[in-house]
Length: 345
Image (tube, rainbow, N blue to C red; front, side):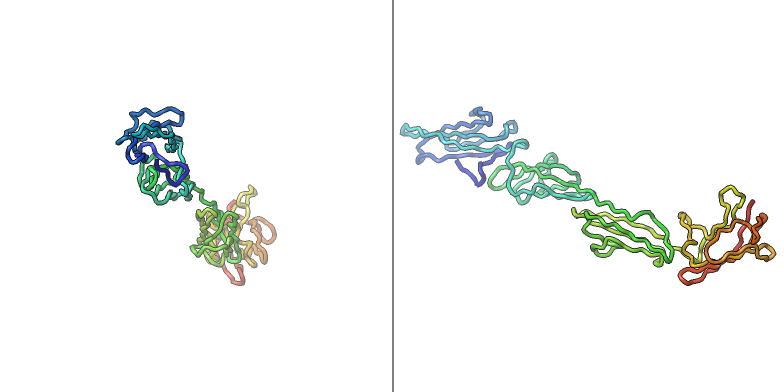
């Protein structure tokens, strides 16, 4: 009986295999026993004997139990001599009891959103379960263990388990969209020990995990793509609105009636969608407010002061429209606003 390169010859359920022995110059008969893993003889009807019994063919049924089968062969010569029984163990591979081929990778990895390519290597045949695909490479985006039946030139088959590992995408967060002024900066920091590269604004991957945004760059969208130690990538973006000091919003009315709501005139108003005041970033502010006859009724110089609707003597002014001139500087550049403000009581 032939033996092969691994510890035991292999067979596979569903396969038909011929086994043979060589007698004394063709002058011998042979009797066979095949003993299953439970020590029970297979019935002779389960295999076909050729010639004087020097070879047999077995169809390994799907109902056979996987494990070690023992072949016992006894030679009987034409001269009346009986030889010592020869035994040989065979491994019957099944999906549940199996000795896999050496060298087949145990796992392949991919990232969420992509597929793992399970490639066992070069073989004569492939059968992936339970999909029954016969392709060499099995693609899947679902984590789990997949079984493939492999056939090579030596063995009818073996069943190898290959694990598909689906790694999560890295989590990266640049924060909420925000507003910057010309002299304001924002440090974007996505440092993470599990990341091995960072790509800012579509640039080449690098080890730079921070980015300094400045209001002087104007309106901008900043993006970062990170790659983690598993090779998975993810991205995030942040929209930064920069102050346009030529088009600030100046509130047109306020209600100094003591109800704690809109009791003072704060100018300019925060940009739409934001609640951060702008005046903190002005170098100095000069405000002049006049009544309808051109008389100066209120003023301030230097730091920002919210107007409470009173005149220069501290007396409440009547409900009416007033005219203002606002002058301020940002990083040395002057800006002037003129308009009307209404006191509503």
